[in-house]
Image 1 (spheres, helix red, strand yellow):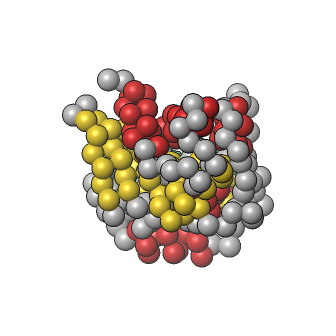
Image 2 (cartoon, rainbow, N blue to C red; image 1 turned 60 degrees about the vertical axis):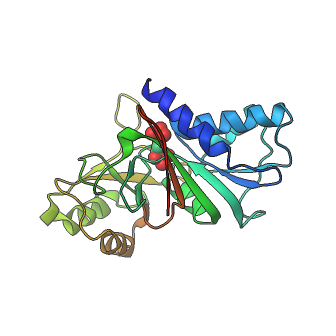
Image 3 (tube, protein in one colour; image 1 turned 90 degrees about the vertical axis):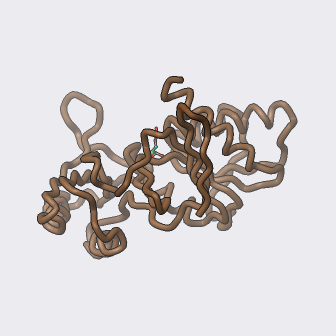
Length: 236
Ligand code: DER
């Protein structure tokens, strides 16, 4: 099975949790994309009705419109029944790293307003500890004096050998990546596991130029993992 087939399997399993009449948080990324497509299919087939979607990015908003999911936002729907979204890393306590797709702020706002947050991943996302994989831990920051904020973030974790890098857009001239909210992203690369996640979260959020980070601690209620050996459902 390809990685994308595994992502689709996990996504379809998560959509089994969707009931007619629900307000749904719609995630962002290549795994959540399958869930949004599936919800659109079931609406079209009449197997689901009265669904309202709350998208976690402009990209998901556009996809949901294209598959016919009625949409609203947190202002009109401050409590959400169920969110389905992917993750970049999942630890054994169901803590997550998210945001490598750049949507972490709206994802955290939407998923923080949910009764149930179902995470869908292929098995490659499972880690023993967050941050140790050497992959990006995203932090959304204001553009004003971004170098100043990036340096302060790097200094916070210098004993973990942390390197902070401004995320650039795919364009050749290396322009800063700009989020749906008009902010920048600094990716933190750690040489070793982030020890105390809560402490790391707190110190990051204390920096005035920081908007949000990609550690989603104690938020997921269920994680659905699709692997070569089948599907595993982990509940909090
Ligand atoms: O950027 C994000 O938060 C995405 O949800 C990411 O965590 C998962 O993206 P993927 O499903 O494309 O791997």
